[in-house]
Length: 522
Image (cartoon, rainbow, N blue to C red; front, side):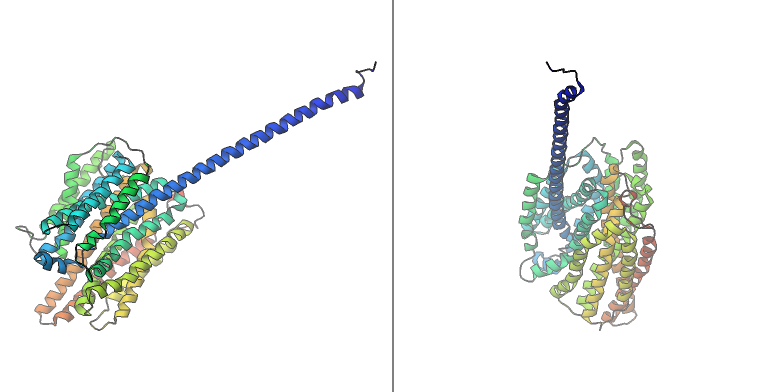
């Protein structure tokens, strides 16, 4: 018999065992690799699914918000036809726009509470339902009273949509890529109001004023249905207290300021039994009480509008620049049509078409500006942007009754380029500087500032123009030349204010959590 204990035989008998162990180890490693690969694929698939869902949600919200904000200025050039159709004076017709802005100013501060308390889908459905119902009432209004009711209901939906869009974006989009998305939001908040008068002029050149609502209604209804079917709940609601006193003070504070500024901008006529300055005083007192009330409530996280957002220096500086920019935008939107029509003799349609390129340029630049913000930060955008805006306003201080129309067109496009460089980084830097728990309050602050600053810009430019022109006419000057002088004076004040934005631009920074790859100092 062979001796199995010999070394050769032992090695031979151990070889299969070693091979078996090696094979098992290889199979186990291969199995682990396949499991890891499968897990990675599943993770990537889930990530792609969430990305697709987020893009869909943001896309629907962007389109819906564009539609609703467009209606804020779409009636501005329709007032003459409205006065004839409904047999109403100019002071009464102006309420079509004033009521819209007033409602926005009252409702927006409450949205911080709404977005904390309720889920994304029901808030969206409520907003678009309000807007659609208001649009239907305005389109079918037999008289002025029903038109105003429709505009107020429209404004309730509009007031909710913008903070909902901003809060959702801040929740879903990572800091490193927010600039691109905020670029699209810039299109909504800046281009929609800018092209409103153009669209209005085009519609009114061939159709009745009611068609401005009939044409919007089916788009709004489709957006409502699509959103109800496809928008998921992407935020987590929590119980939040509702302070009735804060709502009342907010309504009198922000509503009083916007109404007072609008009244002053309309020429300073008495408001019923009150002098024109009374709503401003009432609004200022109510706003001061509202702020004190919020400071008291926010200690226990019970504020209607949490003002701890302003504890961030970057947020505060960004809001200051944003307010100046909105004043420039809305002040120019109200003053240029007056100049083009009353001084240069352009028609309503021609005025709308001349202002259209600036709005389109602003929209075209917004996504590019967003990408630059993601890569380079704020400095390369805000500093040149604020300088361009200021230069454009200084150029408008030199207009005369013989200024070529093409020159006004170029200046307006340059102004639009400057504003396009400002809005996206200001949105991103301001809201990216607050804690995620304050996103809803931060977006409500941005929306409120938009309304108050827009009304302030309109009031400031129109009041200075009217006061200067009236004094010159009383002194015996030609009315047209007096109005040109008043317009130059208004733009001069705007240009002086714009210098402040240049200074602030040097101090706004990109938030720390999205600074990867950004050069120091930006």
